[in-house]
Amino acid sequence: MSAERSQADLRELQLFLARLGSAMNAVAEPVYSVQQRLTQIAAAYGARGARIGAYPTTLLITLGHGESATLELTTPLSSTPRLDQIAALHELIDDAEHARITPAEGLERLDEIRGMEPRFSTIESIGGYAVLTVGLCMILHPAPKDVANAAVFGALVGFLRLVTRKQPTLQILMPVLAAFCIAALTALSVKHDLADPGLRAMIAPLVVFLPGAALTTAVLELAAGEMIAGSSRLVWASVQLVLLAFGIIAGIEAVGVPTAAAFSSHDKLLGGWAPWVGVFIFAAGVVVAHSVPRRAIPGLLVVLYAAWIGQVVGNHLFGPFASGMVGAIVMTPVATVVSRIRGGLPVYATFLPGFWLLVPGALSLIGLTELAGNVHTASSQDFLSAVASIFAVALGVLLGTQLDEWLGTGYRQLARMEGRLRPSGDELQVVRGPVEPAASVGGDGDDVLDADAEAPGQVDPGLDREAHPRLE
Image (cartoon, rainbow, N blue to C red; front, top):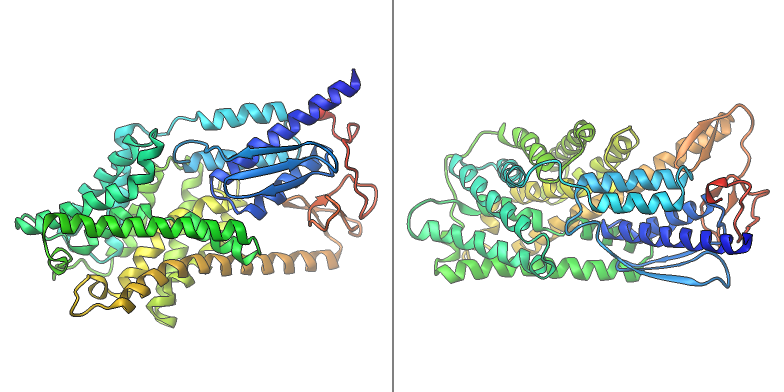
């Protein structure tokens, strides 16, 4: 009977790891992070011989050599995971890493996370997209008429996203559909002299379709040597950018307005105060449109303003093309610190709004007139510069992540030399004695800490039930 229960517990743990890893994949967490954290969770429940293989759309899990393997396909938390769902998922991961819950309880919480209702109603969420778009437009140094048109276009984008959230096929076509509608409305208003929105009102509502999370994760994975995962995400993100560009061109051509006329600009622009206010308005829109938990709002503001200040400083020091990269370098360590504060958003959850903020800022600093599509003034170099500014933000996240890792490693080494701190999981605990080396988990060089091992380097591929009564 005990052996039967042991096998049942193992299967339940394996199912929990598979579904948890699938959810982490669904929110675009790097595969190396998925593998490392699932290995830590397996060790916390006594399965020290677990082997995890993560890819963007699949997951392979075995709890030991010779044991059966589970293949899990990525199942999204919802059609478009919200920031409150991502925050709840990371709380669950933290509990699992310390074995505070049973695998059965973890499976129940995953179902609850998938079924979480948005904090705001449908109408409020659409309004949140309008506010978010107004904030982005203000970062582009707009005219008053640009702001008004951006609000209308943002509400339209919010409506389209909410209408298609339960239609997977339409979601794939959403970047093209939204870009076509926004570009066509912009050109149509110019054609009939109803308004002159220009490029600013067009860019702002479409920024939310930029594959910021995929690009950032792809760069991190490629730098970590995860070539299959990184290259596949990079290809997917590139296709999304192409579809977005196609929708804009098709929308303008359908109306029959010259590109230069559709991209015409105003002379009466708002002052230098507009971008600083725009960051706050953008944050307010993100809170409503993406259901940011109330306790995470101050941390989100800190991260976004840190990114914007870094971009402004980067523009003065290195020029406009590197400004987005500098902003991302500053944003990443700040996001890491904020994530460690109780109630703060996870690091990867802040990358997406940070990416949306930095990309239009970089485009603005480069100069809208160079990107307006005027065949007499613009060239392929202008287009490549715009694309490079997008990838520069992802590269900045990579550099910022490395900087944060160096700082953290240096602090821990200094603390160990003083004999005051010992690492335990993701936290640092105060101790009075000397620090003992931790045992490795997995047996093939994984840097995962196992505080319950008898000695460094020993691996127990089985289930330690005395040390982990949660599985009883």
